[in-house]
Image (cartoon, rainbow over the protein chains, first blue to last red):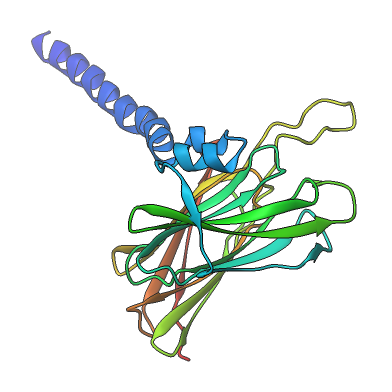
Length: 153
Length: 105
């Protein structure tokens, strides 16, 4: 009788541990790693604030390489390269998109201050390259025109 | 489970050049289906790239990254034959991990 009671208690305890490890952790990890506030912002200033900055300075040391006119608004290739010393992060910000922050890349030491990716654009818009360097924010801007109707998906 | 990523990692001088193509719908949450209902957002939120136990790139994405996302970047400290590991996780908790061996220059 006594051993059975022990076994039942043990099973119950390990189930609790499994639940804690298996179910709670993924949602916590997501909440920590994904800056929901920043992705919900509607202006560059708001996005910078949500990312932890107070403002940004326009810089000639940031280069945006992208087409002047997007052939396909659902796939717009954009490269951002920063020559700002101690660049730590590069963000892609599309001013006229429903959520203006598209992507934010953290660049540890040893990784070049350069990223290329492809984004969707709802309409013709200014695209900001937002760079965090030594804890401060810098940006460059380029207008990309969209001819055919909005981002399909 | 999503399809595997296509990863190309190769040496350019003393740097490792990484190009990755992921297979994901990247549904924006803005699109309507045939009956007029909003298609719920489904997109990759986090991407990490590791080499030799160290993170060489980490990213947070919104739903406006294009379908089948592409990323190109470079890092120092890798050698041919070593491994590059890429992870992503989306807003529904789906995830995928793939590896590539660094090719010579």
